[in-house]
Image 1 (tube, helix red, strand yellow):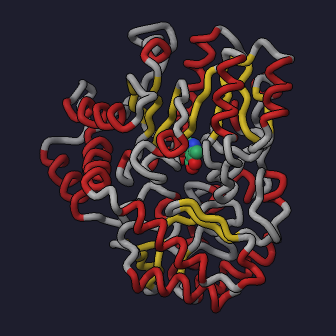
Image 2 (tube, rainbow, N blue to C red):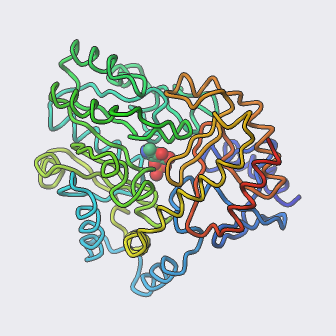
Length: 413
Ligand code: PLP
C-alpha cells in the first residue's frame, strides 16, 4: 500500500510521522491524494465518504466551487501584503452582524492563537491571573490550556502535556461540564479569576450537550462574580447555525473565539467581543498580540465566500440536522442510547447513556469504538479516528451519502 510506504518514511522525517497527533491512525494512516465534495480519494485508490471534514471547517464539503473561486481570484492579486486590506472589514462586518455579543474582532491564524490571546486579554482587562476551563475542554495546544485537555490530547493519553511548567498551569483551574455548583463554589472562594472559558457544546470529547439552562446559569454566575465569560466557538461557530451556540442558546458572552468554518477551510482564528475589552488589544491598548499571517487575504477570501454561502442558504442547517437524525435512526436499538447529535455534529458513544461530562465520556468502551471505526472504514466511511472527536456532516453529503453512512452504522454495529 502506498500509504504504508509513505508513513514508513514519514516516521523518519516527522515525530510520529504526522503534522498533528490526531492523524496518527494505527497501524498507519491513509494518505489523501485529493478531495472533492463529500469524498476523499486516498493514495491507495480508495474513495471514502468523509465525516471528519478537516475536523470541522469544511461545512460546505471539499473544494466547494464558490470557495475555490474566491481563493483562485485572490491569488491573482497576491497572497500576503503585511498591510491592511479591505477583506478584513468584510469578514469583520459579517461576524459582528451575526453575533450580537461581538462589537470588534481581531483576526489571527488559528483557533489556538485565538484562545491564547483571548485569555491574555481577559487577564489584561481584569488584572487577575486565574482562568477556569472545563475538564476535557480543548482550546488548542498552548501551555495554559493543556491540562485535562480533550481532543487528541485525551485520545493519545496525554491530557496533561509534559513540558508545561506547574507555574503556568497553577493558574488554570478546572470544573466539570454541566456542573454549576462546582463553578459557583470555586468562584465564591477565589477572587483572582479573570475568565471562564468553555466550548458551549463540548466538541472535543465528542459532542456533549449542555443541560437545560446550563449555559444561562453559567452566564448568571460569571456575571455575579464579575468574571468574563469566553465562549470558544471554534467548532460551534457557524456549525450550529448562523450565530453559533450563543445565538442558538441566547447567551451573550463577553468574548468569543472563532476558527475553522470562518476560514472556509484555510487557516484562521479570531477573538472577538465587547468593545471595552477588545479596545485593550495592541495597538489600541496594552495587551500585546501580533502575527505575520493574521488576516491574510487567502483565508479571508475563503472565509467570506463560505459564510456568504451559509447566509444565502440558511435552510442548509435544517437539512444537515435531518441527515444526522437519519443516521441516528439507523443505529440498532441496543446501542442507540449512546448516540448524540446536535445539528450536523454527531457521535456514537460506546456507553449506555449520552455523557454529561468528560468523566462520563471517558467511561466509553474505546476498544469497541476502535473495532467499529475499522469496520466503518472498510465500508468506505471515514469517521474521526477517536471516540473523543465529533463527527460532522457537510452540505456536500448527498442523500445517497447519508443513506450509505446510515447503512454502514447499522451493518457495523
Ligand atoms: N478551540 C476548539 C474548541 C477547538 O476544537 C480547537 C481545535 O480543534 C481549537 C480551539 C484550536 O484550533 P486550531 O487547531 O485552529 O489551533
